[in-house]
Length: 72
Image (cartoon, rainbow, N blue to C red):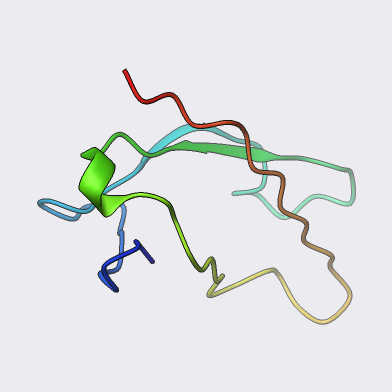
């Protein structure tokens, strides 16, 4: 969710993100990670809330690491 309470989605028109790498799309028993990139206007940042729809079941774990923002 952006700072102005709008949701980003993968196929959103104004509020979208790109998936650069997705090692978690196939259910494996090994560690994997997903890299997402948000390119947006500064008014829509920072991201205030992150949620997941599906983490693969109750036996799976999920973690989040946020990288620095670049306001160019």
